[in-house]
Image 1 (tube, rainbow, N blue to C red):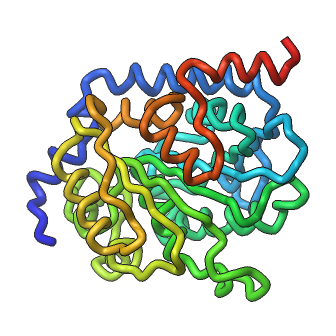
Image 2: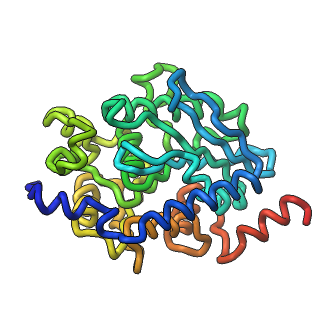
Image 3: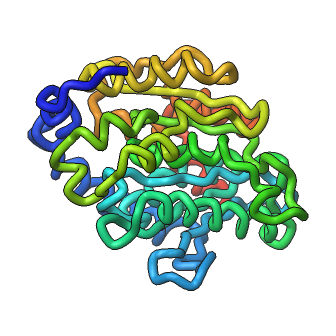
Length: 299
């Protein structure tokens, strides 16, 4: 693909495109704090030795083996935190799904290659401890937003048996990538991102899932907000063309780069329904999250 640096500088600057972006982040933090207070969770579990190599775990009430949703946050690989995204969990815990929300090292302190390896390490940790946590190891599903969507797609290209020969080649049953960038040459040509990421042409190509072969047949669901810039729509179309196991990108009507993530946590939305399908559970009806929480607590 051909990229115009000036256009990318404008179309990838979501904080300029969405004037009230800070209100979304503030609400996510507030709702995430409420989720951690109201639902059983284990916080800051270390999956590696690095200070950022931690995850938060939300478990359903059912003690049988259950699927696990692993959520990977966005922030252009250089900002935000898992603590900002606990609000994703309640819509899935209530459907009997484990939810793990990851942290990973951030640029410019970490190169993108190391960030990708952090996520590989986290998934390896989860898969190896699946039985201990009550997870069906064959039903580990990823969801990622923005930079997290790129990282989720990279995990479908990862051969985990190359990481540990005792593991299968592909451990992820499927992934939903929301508002991601899959050809990083566009990122390399975007000045405000390149200042922190410092991608070489070789690294941009090597870290672009659009140009990598899938490690297996796990499905990739692509989604983008209808009101997002054309650059994000173009990236989703490119990924769909390149990967045989990806469906036509889902356009979330009325959503921009921030509000599209709300749809993932909203029972009854198209993203919630499709992700529940991927997890193999029945989607919750609208307004049922609080009802499920009260039922689990015996209210």
